Length: 75
Image (cartoon, rainbow, N blue to C red; front, side, top):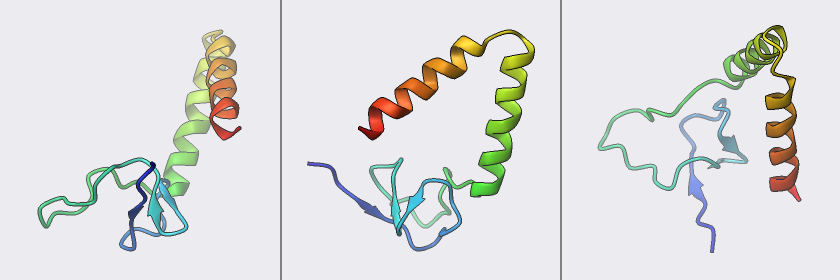
């Protein structure tokens, strides 16, 4: 069974889906902030830059491989 970890602190995090973290198995950071937190807009920008770089160096195969994996996971 998949455990859903609530996350109400970082609603703008890329891993936050309807108030739950989709990446971590625990939200106990011993009183510290989540070390995994990253804003959705920053993540989207970094993904775009990575895609541009992969295309520039001729690695379209990697983009296709990861897109295929994402589609398989969503099925």
